[in-house]
Image (cartoon, rainbow, N blue to C red; front, top):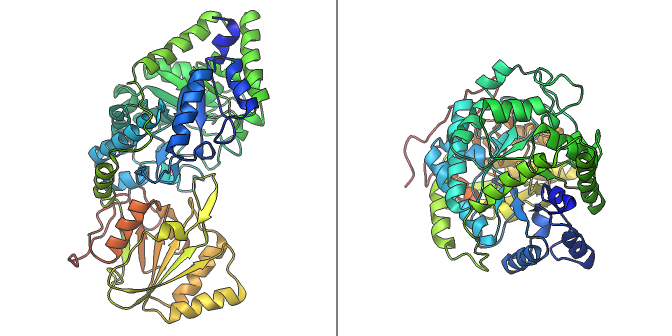
Length: 526
């Protein structure tokens, strides 16, 4: 194999659009690229995706990966896809067997579309309530519980026919910065990491997970070199992951276009540094020029003696072992298992909704109910937006008279007064909110005014449970953790008392509730 092709087999690339134009075809055919990661913008429908998979196989036969975490991070959202409720919701359900079942469904769906690797699950222990990027992407704050659920998720994905990736090593849950936007640093000692962050990674490794993804975070106690994140650190990747945890699977970098890397290192140098540190495949998610620069830098590093060809071949062998261990993909134009998968997931999701506080407002009785929701909801933590009515239409409230209204990001003047008038005229207000960890000021102010207008206001978080800190006087608080259709259906059934809320907080809400807290109704309505 030519050295340039060997180098390219360690690079995972991306491209724009759902169709391959001539320039993209030429780029894919220019090397035997080792991997391609697909995003929502690459996916139109199942037939289009199957054809895209076939074309990529003809051009360079890559490992095809996707970020399908569940909950708020789902790239595949076809009509016959069954979405999981997300990790914190599964953590709230409290049963690793349900986590395994949910991920087996996820893995089977991805396998039947032609994917090889899912960059999931997140096994970050979310110990920082102000973490801006992990939050509900974590199973919770207890490392042992995160480990049990993480191991089960990896087993489920493998059962479905796809490789799992435990991320973000050695742990992103304690940060207060988002590595997409900056370079976080954590002062954790090895002792702290072994007690907290490394516990779930160890569980996943012992459970046979195929891959681990790195974190773009510096740990000065482990690698004192300034600005050297885990992705580029030999003491962390080789010393901690390979030697301490005895992991011999594939190490993927997180995307090298994230600002934590891109602001400090060029695409070529960062690729070489990652391979030196012990990574096996570089997710070089920039443009075509950057992809080629990474290949050229690896070639030059071998030619200069900085890297050995054997080092590159070692990583290639790990990638080939992982791929060979997977069953052949089917690439189906439809999902023949949709009905049974949907029913199985419905039963799982109904175990996740958490009733945190209830001053005799729930379940809803007869009367007029105002459902107030944000205008827009994000499809992913850093992704595109969509109107909230597309999600909330699944929250059916049987037995009550429903009036719906939406609030913009900034609710002021006549618009605010109109909402408050509607609130006064209703028996109960369902105030749905979305935030990663804290409510925007305008949303918090709206909540305060709603309580003044109607004390029978129920706050419903469509994401983080931490948002109760911003409106601690709310007399009732329910957490669905996400707004996938099945979760909205379960939420509606909980609010109306058709099913009991059975989820428990898998994180503490500082100053208010401890992990494990939950409420239920004295008796189900039906």
